[in-house]
Image 1 (tube, rainbow, N blue to C red):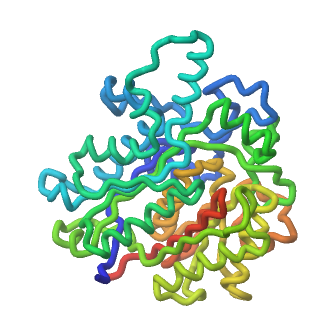
Image 2: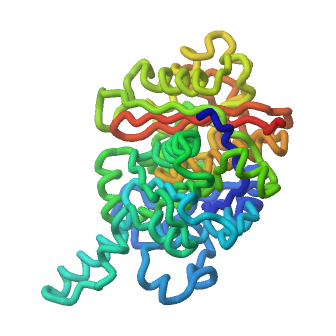
Image 3: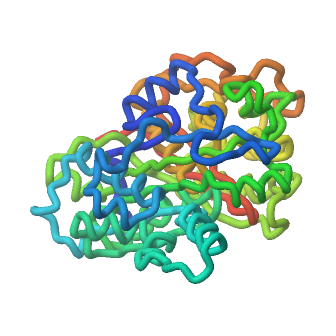
Length: 413
């Protein structure tokens, strides 16, 4: 089957705001969602900053019993999915529940619950572990809880490909829809891993910025003085449908998904392949699936994590794929503003890509004041840019050499 796949709804919880509109307005305004960690005492660590979802109370959106029985990463998934469904106008009472599926991506699942329960057990040996412990921590429970809450009985899957998870769910969704496994799929990424255990590990690996005295300027993709990523949290969810299904219910179409690519570097657990061969192959694969030439891409939403090696390798990979034309394409990373939301990043950045197409406005790469000479593309520094955009390529690259690229374009009849 060669069904066209469209996006009809979006929902987001981010360090820049709750809801797509709030997120987008703050992103375009150049605001930063990074600050001192408040969720735990980070004083023992070299990095004491993060990008938390602020002013979020799960009980404002979900039943109190459900909140108690689920982890924060699941709260994010449930609320963002509700937003996306409401945005889409999809009425599940009128749908075949077996033709509606859910696919979510996450990197660590309920890691904060794991650490909290372990800390309590160490402090009080033999104390009772919550009967909800397993359903709270399992990575698949974000998708499962969304399916349960909305009566979705079709495919229900979870993808765990580190920082590429939020984009790989879109590729998986496109495949299932085109093969006729579903008419509509709720697809997203969610993550909440801001806890002492994760911070301790990433600080030991020297992966995170230590610019604690200036949190708003700590994440600086492609800048010469970047010193590491800043961890974030959140969720992004989209409603994906076959065009035929969307037309039958007279849905508003936000954009069309036309290409995707996924591959592994087969090189290292945390470092990207130095020449960006896997990243380049992934982008080429997405272009081939979309049936597009490189010169047809109007904007690239970069992975751009603010790590010294990662930003250089992504730059080299873009040049490899787009050749001299790489210098004409605006490229930006939103992680200076959102931090790195890991399993949620690709989904949040897909939402960003759709907004770029619909608004004709490219978000800036904030904190880019002294560009790295090896990162010499047009990175839209510090201020948004007004530009008509029809085709966007969005990159997500993760630990283990996980590479994913998604291409979205304006919808045309």
